[in-house]
Length: 166
Image 1 (cartoon, rainbow, N blue to C red):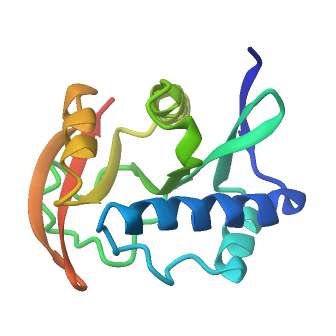
Image 2 (spheres, rainbow, N blue to C red):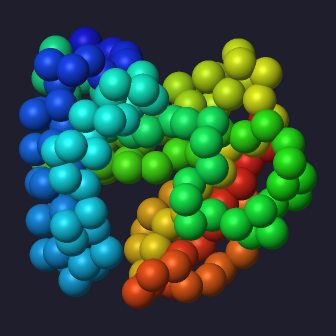
């Protein structure tokens, strides 16, 4: 089976948007409504143009998307509980997979890629958040060595903030 991870291209934006919509529907079906109306096509195009949107392909089909950016996510605070708030960090967001590819190990591929990228670029931390009601995902990240640094409400939902030193 052929697996590759690469920077998304402008020609990938429609497919990425479909993945985001599919994942949003799956989350909604699980009574997790926090992605509703969050990821319109124009925002995806902006992330792709900045070269911060990565995709995972299986047999040349895009099945997973992730943003890896050195810019702090807008609702993350400096005093979020980060060990070293001013230290170089990459922020992960917009992690989405086609539901039929869930629980097949692809998240491990993407997180290994993110860890490697952070190390290669000389950055110290990876940071991100997860809604607190997504317990399976929280446990997955904890098992991957990401530590919880804080929990607080962001918008309508409580979020768990993670950090990993590399």
